[in-house]
Structures are given as C-alpha cells and as structure tokens.
Picture 1 (cartoon, rainbow, N blue to C red):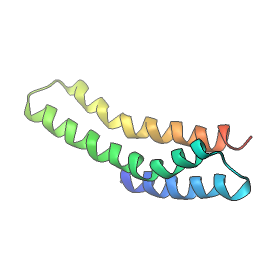
Picture 2 (spheres, rainbow, N blue to C red):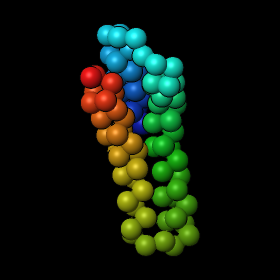
Picture 3 (cartoon, helix red, strand yellow):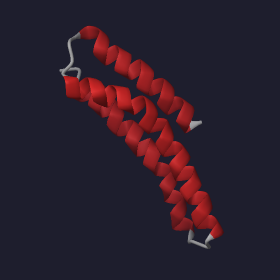
Picture 4 (cartoon, rainbow, N blue to C red):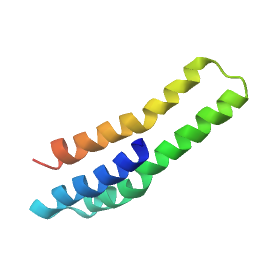
Length: 85
C-alpha cells in the first residue's frame, strides 16, 4: 500500500513542483527518479524483512518497514519545503 502511495505522491508532488516554475536540471532529475525509487524502496524493504524473518532475526528487523515511510517524508519535505521557495 505504501508503494502505491509513494508512486502517486511522487507523480503529483513532482508535477506540482514542476508546474509553477523552471527547475534546475538536478531538481528535475530528482523528481524523475523519485517515481522509481520511492516505490522500489517499499518492495526492497518488504523483501529484506521477509529474508531477515526467514533467517531468524529479531523483531527489530520489522523497523525496516519505516524506510519507505521516511523516504516519502523526506521527499515531501524536498518538494514542498525546499522546491516551493
């Protein structure tokens, strides 16, 4: 579910940032790559949690599910805090 939300957030957040002003090449590339990276982090963290569970890791391994949430929060700060200025 977080993967879908990250995908939609990356598309609409990037569109909102890009529609109001001219962005630098680096900012444009960050917005473009976020469409792939943010949902990918959800899949990678889920696979890592499953692998660690099968390996017998402690319950602290479940904190890896916070990785995509933190990345989405940083992306939101980048788009609406940093690029909005």
